[in-house]
Image 1 (cartoon, rainbow, N blue to C red):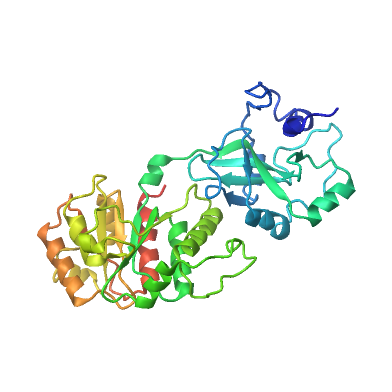
Image 2: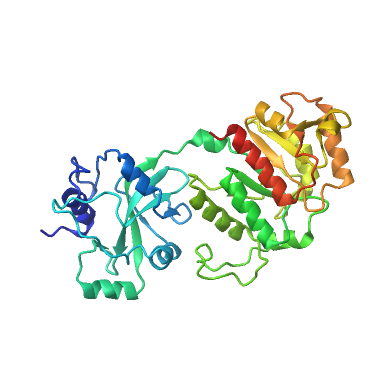
Length: 396
C-alpha cells in the first residue's frame, strides 16, 4: 500500500505500532494533509529508554510550536551531530517481532525542546532533495546516495515527555559577573551555572575587570556554524563573544536536561544612565545604585557576594553582611553579583557597606550583602557556589 509523502509517518504509527497507538485520528486541514494524533502515555520501560536518547535544543533556528505531529527541520550542525557523531541513522536495523509491532522509542528517536513548549519525543526522518520525507524503506542504492550527499533531517514530534513550568523558569536566579580573561575558566562558569539553574547571565564591569576580557566579549567575532558540536573550532582560542557563550549554555542545557537555556545579555533590565548608552557593559557601581532605588517590580533581590567574611566578622565587624543560606531562605527571587578575579576595589567595598547598612537587614531590602565564607574564591568558583546554594534551597 502506497501513501502520499505527507502521510509517511501516519503509516508508521498506524501499521507498525498499533498496540501503542490504538486510536489515531487523521483530520483534513486546509490542504487535506494535516495530521492530528491522540497519543497515550508511555509506560515506565519506554520512559527509561528516553533518558538515553540524544537531546537537542531547537529554539534558535525554529519558531514552530512543538506539538503532536509538528515537524522541525534540524540544522546542518545538528544533522552532522546525529549522523556522524551519534551515528543515529547508521545503526543496524533490528528485525521486527512476529506480530509486526514495534516500540515507540526506537533507534531513530531523539528528544527536542525549544524553551517554551516542554520536552518532546521526536521521530527523525530524512528529507530527500525533492522535499519528500523518507520512511527508511527505499532501496539500498537511494539510501546510499542520500548518506553520501548532503541530507536534511526533520524531527516529528510524537509525545510530550515534560511540560514547561514557566513559573519555575521565571524564578531562576540571575548572575551578574565580571568577564574572565581565560576562556577555559569562562567556559567552566557558563557550563556549571547553566547546569545549576541560572536564568539570566549578565556580564558587568568592575574596577578590577580585565580590559582584554571585555574587548573579547564585545568583539563578537564570527563563529563557525558547527562550533557547538565540535566539528570545527573558532579561529581565536580566547574569543569569548556572546555567540560562543550562548553555544556553551545550549550545550550545557542539552546535557543537564533543563527545559530552557539561560538568557545571556548585557541588558540588566533597568534604565541605563545617559553616559552608559550604547554597546558598553554596565558598571558595577551603577548597577548597585540603580538597583537600590527599588526599580525592580518583580521583587528580585540583588545579593552582593563578599569575600573574607567568616561567621565571626559577619556577626561583629560587618553586621550588614548576611550568610548566603540565610539570605536565600528569606528571598525566593535573587540576583547574584560576583566580583572579578582581583576582588572588589576599596571604592566598591565602601559603596556596598553604605547601601547595605542603610537598610539595617530589612527583609524587603532591594540590595543585600552576603558572605561566601572565609576563603578567598576564584571568580568562577564563587559564581558556582552561589548558584549551587540556590539550587539546594529552592530547586525541587
